[in-house]
Image 1 (cartoon, rainbow, N blue to C red):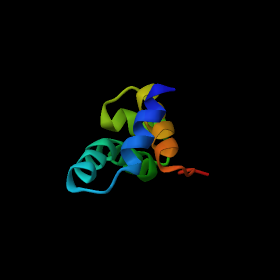
Image 2: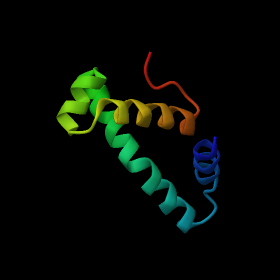
Image 3: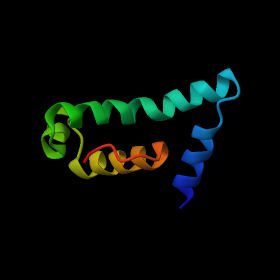
Length: 74
């Protein structure tokens, strides 16, 4: 998958300020989505509160887990 390869390459590059800034831009929206889901403990409810489609929020969580290499929710 092209997206996974791009995300992983961006996340692995932290050697200079530009790469760190790029990583922050990539992760910031996903971390905000994660915070919403964690707060409500429900993807659909979080999506409604954040006014985004539930499917978009679910995909964002999957991508964040893939980028970080960890399961975020048990």
